[in-house]
Image (cartoon, rainbow, N blue to C red; front, side, top):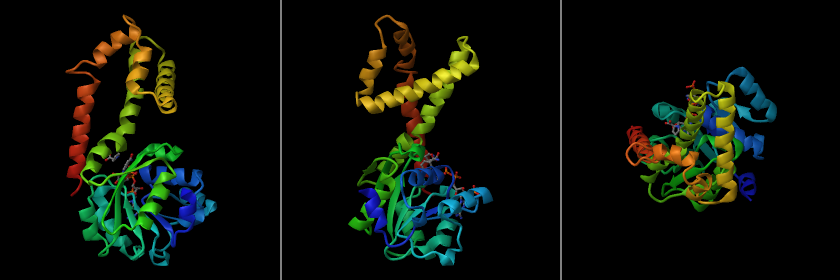
Length: 278
Ligand SMILES: NC(=O)C1=CN([C@@H]2O[C@H](COP(=O)(O)OP(=O)(O)OC[C@H]3O[C@@H](n4cnc5c(N)ncnc54)[C@H](OP(=O)(O)O)[C@@H]3O)[C@@H](O)[C@H]2O)C=CC1
Ligand SMILES: O=C(O)[C@@H]1CCC=N1
């Protein structure tokens, strides 16, 4: 269904910035059936091999700006700090029917309305890197200029790499950035820390790495596939008076455990997202 919507778009899908997040979206799109010929990638950092690999697939990589027709969808995937200069350079690709989809942390719809042509349709989103394997999740908010068709195109494009959660209030995006945008890093840190803790408990380091990796990915897959509440899945591991209960007494400490630590971390990330508004 979503690929059908994308086939009917009038104009290219232009990705501005193919770094870690833009690259993850691109990987997901190409892996999940978006026609390469619909895609234009703009990124001065693309090395010649990457540009050639994209060209071999049929993606237009770094064409001259004035050769690019008005985008159907233009995705802004550059760092928030360079947004003013980058938006100034791509204004000519934004036409009356384009929808501009920002994935930049912090940068507000108000900022983008000032920088883009008057009346531009803008969607502010926050995706995450599991999009590279079609397991992302995106939170999105639209400005008043976004038509139902533009919203459908955005949903279709981002929906190829995971669910899209539309919200009405832009202020929710900062907290969503802190939870799902940055969240994969917290999970990877858990894998790193678990491996180090295993080595400290006497396991050979390479075995500890394999155990931690398989445990984090296996638990994630179980959470996804079972649909069971995470608290129940946790209880299913926890035998009364057993080893897990001994560990959870530390991790669930009301003052120093995961709960207060993550609450503090998410609050700090939310605050930083607001600062990045500029
Ligand atoms: N990484 C993540 O998990 C997530 C990131 N985001 C957001 O995505 C955006 C990109 O982040 P991330 O991918 O991590 O950062 P990266 O630095 O990896 O990617 C940004 C890319 O944009 C390139 N770039 C710089 N200037 C231009 C330009 N004028 N035109 C086109 N491309 C340009 C950069 O090149 P160069 O390196 O040469 O500057 C780089 O390749 C940020 O705004 C971030 O907040 C959102 C959700 C998750
Ligand atoms: O760290 C960042 O600022 C970006 C936004 C969410 C994930 N990475």
